[in-house]
Image 1 (cartoon, rainbow, N blue to C red):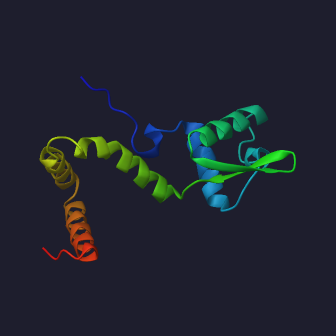
Image 2 (tube, rainbow, N blue to C red):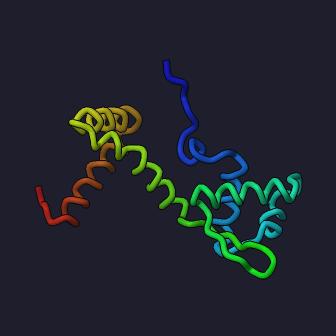
Length: 136
């Protein structure tokens, strides 16, 4: 009935897009297309340029004019980008009439995969309650 989609960032970005993002996260500073191209010796300049422009339009890269070229940098860290994508995916589900089925399904899937994840989920819930001042 449903076809399995790629997981994580691969469900939103193509292979080359992810590789470009990885290069920029590892660099930790702005880079031009030519700078990034060095990591892709088999790719054409225009391919990398188009990929970086597409990432800019998607909001994953910020850019500014630096001389005659654009300089790009990631809009967010990898962790922040993953978190914002997850938040956007689950927000409509939690805004429905009842979030209970969604939460139950999530807990069931987490517990089925790994007992440690279930413990980690419980730890994070307790931490969030303490941060919010609700010690339930």
